[in-house]
Image 1 (tube, chains in turn cyan, orange):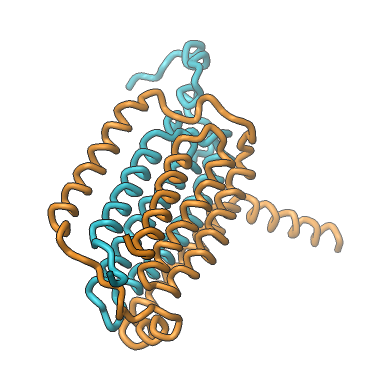
Image 2: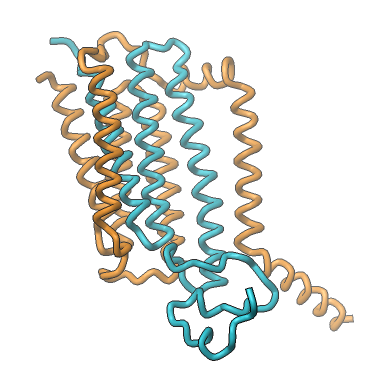
Amino acid sequence: MGDSLPLWWPLVLACVLFAIGVYGVLVRRNAVLVLMGVELMLNAVNINLVAFDAYFRDVVHGGQTLALFVIVIAAAEIGLALAIVLRVFRTHGHIEVDALRELADRDEPPADAGADRLDDRAEADQPQEAR
Amino acid sequence: MSWVQVIFVLLALVAVGSALLVVTTRNMVHAALWLVVTLGAIAGVYLVLAAEFLAWVQVLIYVGAVVVLLLFALMLTKAPTGPQPDLDVARTVPAAVVAVLVGALLVATVVAGFSDVALDLEGTVVGSAQSTGATVFEKWVLPFEVLSVLLLAALIGAIVLSRGDEMVESAETTETARRGGR
């Protein structure tokens, strides 16, 4: 038996990792953990690219080069996303993605600032403006 | 099973198991460290699939840089180091159903399409630094240059985003300090 393996093995590995990444993005509350799920999904795509590069015996290695570009784009994405996460942490004090309601950067605090926090006490004290 | 198949299956099991731990563990720092294991196993998969240069790039950029960046973000957002009970949203089951459906759909598609195709690694050209470099600078020069501009723009954006207020404040303080010194 030569050095061969069924092509669907790496493809199924990529699909399973992608599904795990989808689960991580959907289920995590912390923004940094959501980004970890995104990284898993990007890596799954790279496995696909490398597997088809080896299958087609690409002499110019298009699949591997594209995977390299995806890695670079993922590095740019993670740097920018973590900067946004730090910014959100500085303005809101937490990075729970399901508790973030007010994302605008304003000079004066908005009238319903309490909606961002989980208690609505501030909302009860002052009457709401007409909407 | 040949040795290549055994090694591939072992690496795939390590990658999938540690990826599951990344999305289910109760400890945020452990999630980042399990991500190291997953990305390392994926680098091993690249080696099996004759992508040598890509495997080392994976180790350098993902394991070396991205995970360290994630750990720094956890540190700067004051993430608690102990196990946390409330890391997941309340609706875990619908998310798991969606993920299983996505996985089942993708797996069914690739198995239906490629179940009888063998990936012969016997005479494959290994993607070394030489061949990858020649490809990038002969065939992919324009995307490479565009990518470098994109990376520069993203990093400048990250710097501006992460220290927007402080730059203005520090400029003002140096201005007042200079005026006061005079």
